[in-house]
Image (cartoon, rainbow, N blue to C red; front, side, top):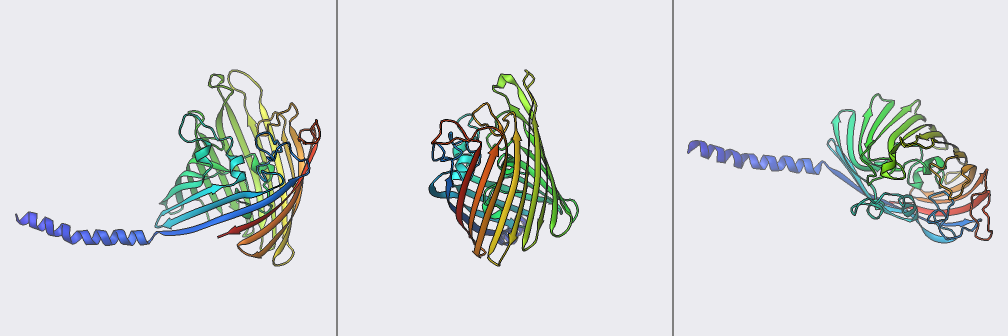
Length: 374
């Protein structure tokens, strides 16, 4: 009986301590709520056959601006960022025309998941710090590829370059981020595949990213991704995709310079076929001219002769050049008014024109956006 009483007393005395410890742990968590709204108007001088510039037959090859001669929302999201003692995470829900466009190819095998669910989740991951310099995250997160991001306010140009639009923006799986040295960060990804949340086959993709801070203003990056793609049918076998990219970004309070070169190969399946190769390059410069005004310019090249990434719907592939000029007005840190003119010239006539029966070799559009971050 004495042992039972001692045990009961110990439980009663210990319970408040556990409760207090849990309360202390709970209060150590910090949750930050935020969001972003990007509204736009765009006019494409080729006047695409539908109001959609690049969706359901628009065939103008960029995910944004997705609509022609229309006021709409490019991207809007709300987010909750969680941080605490060795834990972190992010949940961001999104909508917009660029979201509909970018997630249109999300696979829909079976009756669960697919694009109707996937496009709502910009990021949804949970992470744990397993060692002092090592974090492991699981869920849906931004991909390891490229130097331009999904959100326009984080990029030097308003619209994203072709190398960004035709490499993954998001991934689903597990990633490990290791701060190897004060200057070198390494990231390792094990994910479902090439920009897909819902799975397409039984294979998984592997990715690596290295970022080296050469100086406080200059970062050098390397990234890759290896995955098996399903062929025209499951019986046709899989095709190994090999993707590599390098980039450099120099940024001060007044000047941003960015350069990126991507290249990839899609090997033929075991049943036979051809190899598809592609490569792309972009160079961007953004200069502040006053405290609230900046100008930005871009040149780019993209060559996809076997139509691995850019499917034109014609026998002629995308082998073209592009450029853009933009003006950014930032009356206060959370507000941006960005106007950009952008054009492409292709080796072959692939750009549809609503007022001509045959495609054109060039396309020009202008877009203006007002965005708010909160």
